[in-house]
Every structure is written in C-alpha cells, then in structure tokens.
Length: 240
Image: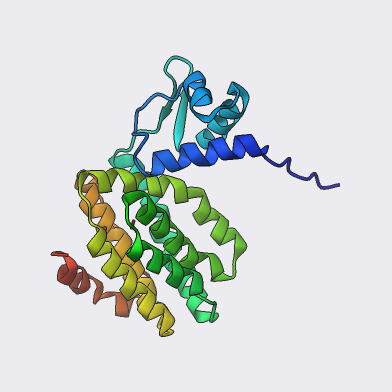
C-alpha cells in the first residue's frame, strides 16, 4: 500500500515560504545566521514550525545546518554555481525544446515575462523571472524532467540573487527572455533551446568568471556553430 505524504502544517508552510522569499530576494544574505527564537518572534509562531521549515530548506540546499554554527544561509561560490548551472544547461534547453515541439501552451511564460517587465522592485522581478523559466520547462511532457529542474530551482535563484546584488543586469536578461519566448512561440524549438542555453551560459560566465570552466554548447552541432557569434553580439548588453 502506497503511503500518502503528510502535508506540511499551514504555519510551517508560511514560515518556510517567507524565509525562502527573504533569502531569494537578498533580505537574508549568504552566511547569515538563522536563529530559531528570533525567527519565531518575527513570525509570531513557536519554534516548532521554524525548526521544521529550516529542515526543509536545508533539504533544498538554501540553508546549511551545522552542529557548531547552527543554521545559516548557504554561501554561494564558483563551485556551487558551476554545479547548479551545469545541471540547468544539460536539462533546461532540452525541456524547452520538447515543450515547443509538443505545442504546449506558453501562456504562463508570457504572463511571467509581463510581470517581470512591470515589476516595481527587485523582489517582484526576481520572483517573476523564476516563474518565467519554470513556465518554459514545466510543460515538456516529462514530469520527472520537470521535477529534476525544480530540485535545483531554488539554488539557481540563490546564485542569481547574489550575482544581481553585485551587478544588476535586469535589462539584458529581459531582452534575452523576450527573444527566447519569441522563438518558442514561433515554433522554433531548436532556436529557442539554443537561445536559452546561451542565456544561461553567459550569465554564469559573467557572474562567476573565477569558475574557469567551459560550458558545452547545445548538442545540435551544425546549428550550434552560430552560438559563439550570438554570444559575442550580446556581450555588451542577466536570472538567468
């Protein structure tokens, strides 16, 4: 008999989402200590939902639990960025390609892009950008592929938040997002996948040049030869 997952209590869910939002919008910064009693007082709850929320966030890679240091927001470095973005580069363009080829609706992506353009603050824009990327890969037709990308989604957003704090690049990224969506809506699955790959790759190279690693191009070898020229054309122009 298959067991049914126990739902997260509403207070724990509220605390979880609020801490996550603060981390991903930069209000809680990498390395910052997360003290249960302080958070419980801020949210008007007992320590129990805070403790459970922090355990869940540790499981997603946003916080780190240490016997000696307690709970802290995960630090972001070139190694972490390389690991997370390598997974995105391998999976996300392929998921978008499949979504386009199966004629999936991209209305959610269009809506997220509009919200990002109309955002009045960094937090709004960041959340809308995350939804834009998810709306591109989620309708790929393979639920497991979608879940795999969901698993690195928060960590990717943390990398982006750190990069944006150091070098805001909203306009460049918005332009790249519009081009990706234009190609996808036009039915150009390969073109959209290449544009998404170039978008993600250029972001991580720009944000973490010290990583010093080469990102493989998309696997459509004959067409991918144009990718370096495209990146060069955009060099002067960032969620990636």
